[in-house]
Image 1 (cartoon, rainbow, N blue to C red):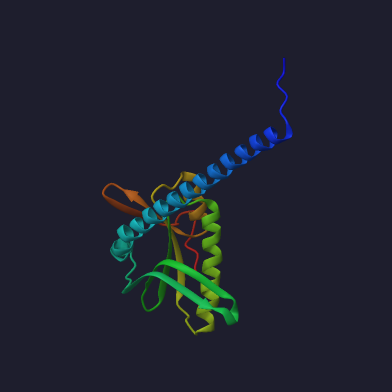
Image 2 (tube, rainbow, N blue to C red):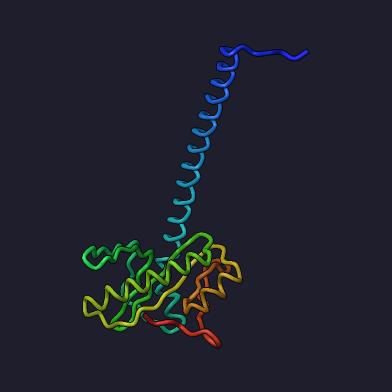
Length: 178
């Protein structure tokens, strides 16, 4: 024998289910927020570990950068140039722009190409004729992502033992200058 609910009983059941769904959604949103804070903190920790040693590591492969900047924001609304740079190394004739991700993806590399184009435009508008080079740094970089970055002309920075290594785009790949 089936139990037949009255409309008020059915409404009470539906209201209870909706209340549970709203609470589940709230808990999920809170968990996402906490996880986001964790990953952002992890990303900042990686930046603090990598950036202070970048100039020394690039010196090992022939670059002499005299200045290092962290978390640089470029805003030129007049020319629609708005971007952020994780690490900015410079000297008299070259600039190295480093994008740092926990686990970079090909989309991050494409975004970095766009960033480099914006920075070149910004540099040209300010009579900065230095050569702009790019690098991608990550804690976990898959081989296909690393190859993609090298094909785009980026240097690849990844962990190696107690420190990190820089792979140059050389051989069949070449550093891209913006």
